[in-house]
Amino acid sequence: MPVDGSDEPVGLLGAGTIGGGWAATYLVRRRPVLVVDPAASALERVTAYLETVWPSVRRTVPEAPASVPLDLLRLVPVEDLGEAALVHENVPESLEAKQDAYRCIEAAVAPHIPILSSSGGLMPSELQARMEHPERLVVAHPQSPVYALALVEILAGKATSPDVVAAVLSHLTALGKRPVLLHREMAGYLTNRLTFAMLREAVHLLAEGVVDARGIEEAVVYGITPRFLVGGPLTSLALAGGPDGMRGAMRSFAPTIEKWWSDLGAPHLDEDVRDRLVAAADEILDGRPIAEVLAARDAAVVDALPLHRAGERTGDTGA
Image (tube, rainbow, N blue to C red):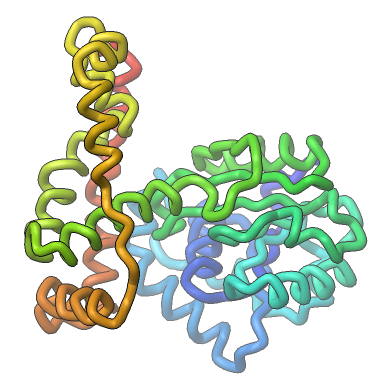
């Protein structure tokens, strides 16, 4: 099931931030993009997004076009998705909305065309339950900003064809992504579960008055994040074990780790905690518009990519 013809367009259903990020990912590689979005301002919106982020997008790909190749971007009716080699679905995180989207896509494209859902937590078996050809659907959950972050979580439903999974993995790898295949369905998938596990403890610490909002943010930004440039939590635990790695860590820290796990919080988002979170966000943002902070975050992600790649090289050498 080849999906990597460089001249064949890809289809995007939904032109919000995720859809715009996928558009940037393909356009910077000069791949034609067909956008389907019912909003009257969809083309204007996605074009404005692309022009805003393009200076950062260009830094992610060698020999990228100097400006957005808008001649490769078309807003089309859903019927025209029949030209696409694959389709990314990027509609809101609603099972009903996504199932409606698949009905429209399937009416337009041939049975062998893969449909990649950008869902962040819905079960693929439920997503594909009403499809005529459910074997073609696979979750391909990107990270934001989509054009910069390589990770894409891949999750198959019960009816998904292994050939489709293999084709999607190959396609995303050729696109410069780092697809990670999950071996079973689970709500929230991978990165959201890891992220929300940290968020739960952050909310608990804030609600219990252990630390203020800025302290939580600084602990993550200045204490945890830099160490994760080379390896994640499992690597960090192995390194804490000294020369014996994970074996040393288990000998030294297993009882302590279990004790700390048993003491982790399970906060409830009641009215008081919600008010504390709103106040915390007001303190952290300090009057800056969300769009400004988001743009700064995305630019910082692109700035960090060379460090990330350097960390990967260091890790590859065993240093």
